[in-house]
Length: 497
Image (cartoon, rainbow, N blue to C red):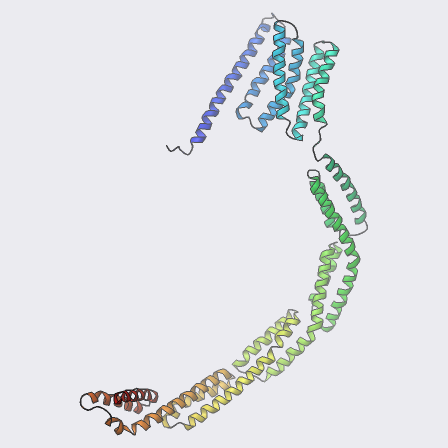
């Protein structure tokens, strides 16, 4: 059987409705009993005032009955406080009812009720120190009311004194109760006062103790609830104060050292601003008391100044040398070198001379590579010219334009492109010349080749292949003709074998 999703909620609602009905019925019964108890006083047969006490108690019980429906923490606390207020008064009524017969029965019942109230009061409000304090104050009020009732009844003073001692004896231990951290809290309080006194004395003589003072404030905020954590914060504040005091002695020496480095850097490169800016920020932080940040900034200023002092002059000279070396160069091949030179200048503008020097030192190697590629391109063009001049007729004319393209690329400074064009041209001219010589030599022996062909219809296919070789040679496709001739020769050798 599948239950609907809201089955649990509906069952809880039904149970709550039944409990509310029972509580309402109980409330009505209590109100009716209070009215029944008060009814004889309405016609004057008995005095009204003596009967008002039980009536008030019954009405209070009727109101408290509604707290049993939810019975949450707040409701349980109210019921426990009411029990603490009520049990001394119930004991006082039991003392007043002491006697024989029905009075003895009434006394026993009242004592049982008082015992139940006392037991619930002590159990419900006895978990933590805060609940014990609440139990003490509610019990103190209840004891005062009970003592007042006993005294108003005119009982023997010995009985009244014993009653008062019994009630107060249950309350006083709760009033004097201390939690398990009481001693630790006392020790923390003494240590906190001493730490605050030391901090006031130190701050009157030095600055930069804001962090330590903040730790002491955190200890004050958290230490009363957690003494162990408070003691840890106080120890951290003490260490921070000692560190700041030690740093205050060294900060002047660090500042003087940084200032000397900054002035040396500015003497070498007056245009730089980074070291001086970091140094001034360090002075600002020191004035605000942040000695740790001031020390860091002073060291940054010294580091930047040291880099400028060590590398600025060398980087500037290296960049100047590279500019002179590339001044008479032009063409696409020099663009990469110009890009490297621009990167070195950008590093100098960013006040990073070490990086600029590293970049500028790479320029000579690029220049050497560029010069080497230029020489190789010149040699390749010369070889292409020689190969082309040795070529015959149409072959030389057909490739003259490619040689001019290579020379034009070289003139524009694109040595790698010029070398590639010239090498390709020389290689193709040599290959074509070799193919032409081979084909021409074979065609001069055409009759000897044809004589090796088979007779009849089988020889026609061989003859057609030889004609293809002649046609390719006639059209100037010497490479194709040489390839076809090689295939024909190989097949003919296989046929002869």
